[in-house]
Image 1 (spheres, helix red, strand yellow):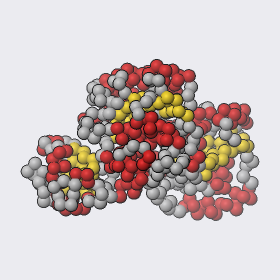
Image 2 (cartoon, helix red, strand yellow):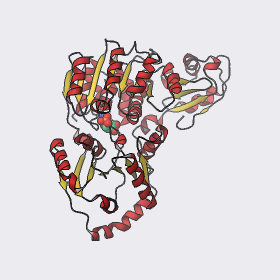
Image 3 (spheres, protein in one colour):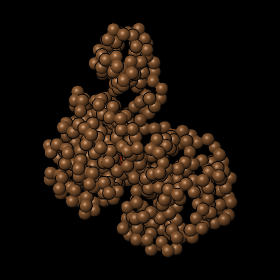
Length: 483
Ligand code: AMP
């Protein structure tokens, strides 16, 4: 980071205020390099890791350029996983909150019809996985003619997962006159090919993980027989006694088995893998993010790009398949200036593999001795106390941003022919309220939601109890959390 602030870019006031509220004061290196060029409409091929602040690097220009009045999507962001799609959508929604930018996430295993209904409303930014995005394009439920920005996030993983055909089909369907930005942790040949074929003289940008954001991680490995792994895991968790820890396994079955064993020992834990229902996966991630339990057992689905603050320890219970996955898994810790630790269990026959990973990642991954018995015994009581204690809920970075916002629920929607302008017209007439105090409006068939900004929610709620919209008094109340 440096002394530049976000005010030094030509960004509009609602964007800068949102960044302030999120606690983003100084741009990170990738943001410094990307934002001015993206605003200048150059194509960009960016080599950057998660933890560098890359989501905001494309999120800020995308929100800045979006024309609020335009109803059709103006930016399309492709991500390899559903979790990442949700997370990117959240970041865009936060950055764009005060400009009332609406972001919609679309991905498989979630109702197509529900996404279709959301896309029909004003959706400035669409974030999705390639398969489902293509489905929407083919069924003509995602209009592309106004898309001016395309972002391909985690391009290397996208290609690893075999999405190349779908990504190319989407590229062909998009208007030619657009800005394309590609982000990738590594730039293998196939990613470079993609840049060569579909981008216009892309500017290549490379950034190292931002130390001040990514913090520092110590890397160690233990050589351990397959049968001894579980005993070692118990000892390591006692000695490290982490506040928040991710444990990676190679397969879904191994996640299930380990999770069951840990649960029977009363570890406060959760699990996540690709065989679970999407809603359960999101639910687990959110609960872990909020600090409701300390240990998350996961396959690589949770490794890519997922941003959870304050994970102090990552354990590779099974060696990752390759160096790239090692980087992504262990990148979950040592973030936001905090220090972290990554511990890998390596069977004797895998020792050469971890040494290769050390070379290719250029990380220092040192061999460690098993924790001595007496140390484990000495630390046992503190460990027991922590796993039994109720964890402190973690604050979320968007809390300050949301503080002045109240979501109102109105009993009436499209079926009563109500439109966004009807809400704006009525609410902006309330004494002490201006159009700028009205946030995102979401009109469904029978109900509507309206965000009221700047702490004016209670005032509007009171006034709307008697006011009419299109000649009707609608029942109104504060919406439930999560609605
Ligand atoms: P990313 O690389 O996009 O996954 O971002 C890593 C983390 O850095 C996220 O928690 C962001 O909220 C946070 N972040 C991004 N930009 C900034 C900034 N300029 N200042 C402080 N934190 C940031």
